[in-house]
Length: 402
Image (cartoon, rainbow, N blue to C red; front, side):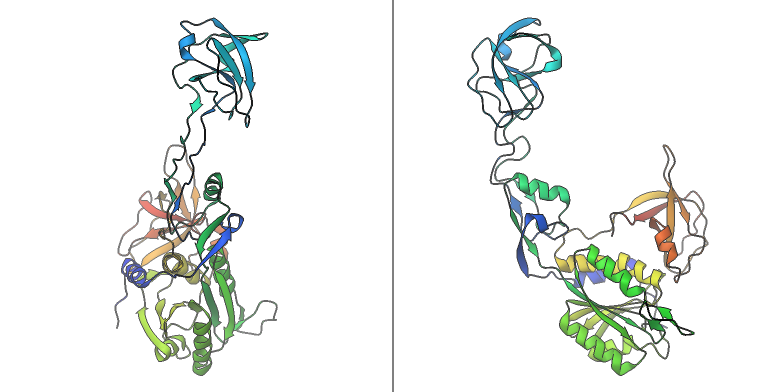
């Protein structure tokens, strides 16, 4: 019997085979959220573009203040967006947050440290040189690289690029991923169930996960347990998409035809992993198109996609950061050693000053889709390890990973 492939080895082999698409497009900045940046971005300007005040107060010259309590004449008022005049020696300028520092001024005193007296101001606290002044280029210098190629753009990144005056960005075109479900027992939602049938949930899980990464989804429907029909559906999907993902039909049963169909159309590079749930996971190619065969149970679909498929697709999409977010938590349960690396659905219980405690869903069966909606993440239990309550575990939060 073929030995099971460790999860870490499988992931390394997948990423070694994942190239990067080269098709690019230029989008308005407003459409960039979640897209993968296709070129390094450098600042063409300093940010801020001029010295400005960090507070509401008074701009002045430090050398005009030999001691606290000096009274200066207020020579001008400077609001944001309105450059002032050169500061006269022995005077102060009333200034507001973000307003340009007038030539000659070298510090700003907060209004709380002053006392206004008509057209004069009493400075009660001595400033230091450069106090409360945001210098030109304090945030970003012209020519500085601000974002690297391969970054998946966040809302704050769009704001950063906008601060540089950009309106468009080069990004990789989204992958098109074909998904299909196999099995005579599977019917679409909305169709009445006959004895022995169940509604397709896997394609909806996958569609949501893929769209969450900004990828386009090509739904290829449900294929019955027939070798020729499976071959035909896989062949058509591979011709239309950058990657094909099927669910079900990759085990060793007499009616599991996906493995045979893929081997007839291309090759399988990975099959049967030391992962729980998801042992029948497979990866290969249909012609030149990468293919993932995921198990039929919905939890196994979710886990194998999250642990293995996600990283591959992100790298194929051009992303430079593909690793899952991880944090350390405290196990709230014990478990005997297992022969596969296990991913259990848990919900965190937070405690002050201590690691969060991971509480597992009562039943870890791979068909229990409700457990995924209940959980806020997965804990990773290495193969062959006896887990005791209170042990430290790696935890994959759904928020940030999906």
